[in-house]
Image (cartoon, rainbow, N blue to C red; front, side, top):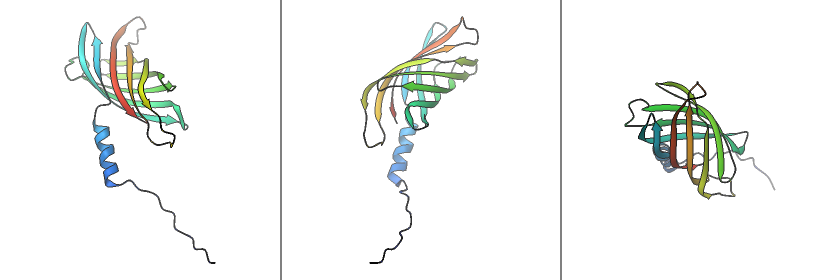
Length: 152
């Protein structure tokens, strides 16, 4: 019996998959409150988590926060590292906004974590608290409380 070689075929995403991913990326991933300078402001956040060396516990996090009513901190970017287990997670990053750079440690917990065994996307809700520490160690500039979701 003759055997014929088949060309390699990559499964390309369908139009529906691309549209779904675009909609999910456009939706805010976090919502909460930013407490700074004696005021509280509404905050929305978007983030991308990139696994480190195929380990789901370690991730590089790129984030963007938008505080639509805050005159001092309307937009801020964040680059950080996050380590976690099934429910708790911890992170350390650097944030930047018009006031300058801050260190931004965080602690959080995943809620309603849906883990899949087929290595496809996992969905979870989370609650996290993030501090913004100014370069002067004695000054806490802001604290952010966020509730959000992630697909990883």
